[in-house]
Length: 422
Image (cartoon, rainbow, N blue to C red; front, side):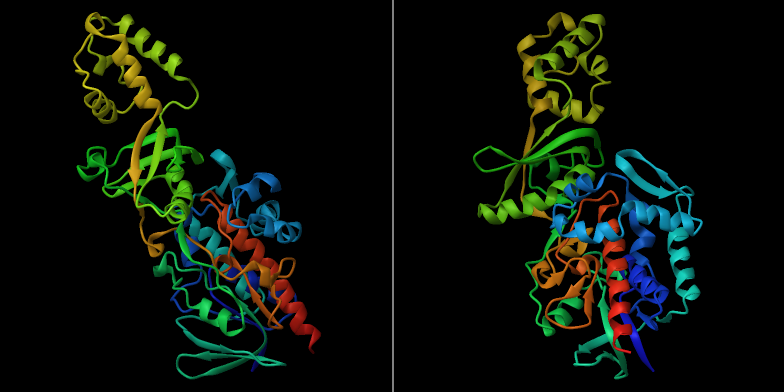
């Protein structure tokens, strides 16, 4: 049988592409090399599936620093509110959480996955699970998908939706780049984004703060000359290898680029533990707290300011005894501590590997893609969607939004183009 559309890859963009192609009357086959569809969706958002984000288009684009502006066309067809409407039309109730993130009300990612898989059945879309594609052969009137067992599948349109190189256990191993290159496409440099950073700082090596989160802090990457590169505000988690947490993950791509651009082995990051107040205000709050309980140790009275281990570490670094009381407290030491709290600086030397990143930076060059179709400018009836494209966003529903949006646009245009040939 010859299909109108074959979609390779059963992640969020591939599922949406296949469903949309089927919905628009194309005979469609979805090929997935794993045992299940939607594996990356099933683990997204900590297993709760952050399906999108409700920020307005302009802010949404700003949260997709990897070529987000390319998505304006796709978003004009199918944006974050379209995604919300779509899932609610399928009976998936959604709720809004902090920073505009949208989750299923029942906090179960499998609800989202199962509803998409149901739509595969609704539109009679064929699926081939545990099926590996060896190669894609491009022809003038049809394309041929070669499976690893030698089987050949003919199709009019092909949608490549196999993801990047991050989270390989979900099936994203970078195999799609070779198929894109064969069609004449350029692959921009690949690098990890949304990835924990590594550090050789003594307190990291000693695991002094391992497992501690700093909530709602501002973390800044600095150029070698001390000027800021980028600041992100959210939570930071200290690990046995360096730092993680949403603010650090968002900053990671800027660190990767800075290490390369400046040809250095380390980049300084600075954490402001109290971004809403200045140093003088912090000093006053610390002094007032100590003065109000003059006979208690500063370790006790300053406990509400920072986690105990972080506070103890900082006091040790400035050589201030944590059992000091207000009666023996020197203001210059409080000034020193406040500075430390506002400028907790240390060096990071890189990130974990691209395989351990949440998202792949780089991919199929967008100069070679028609933005309102997700169609190749080089090869007729070839479409791309999702993370294989040189598009990446921050965590918080932005990458899944891009995946669903590009998948929908690729699916509908692959179907239209195939049906034109009939």
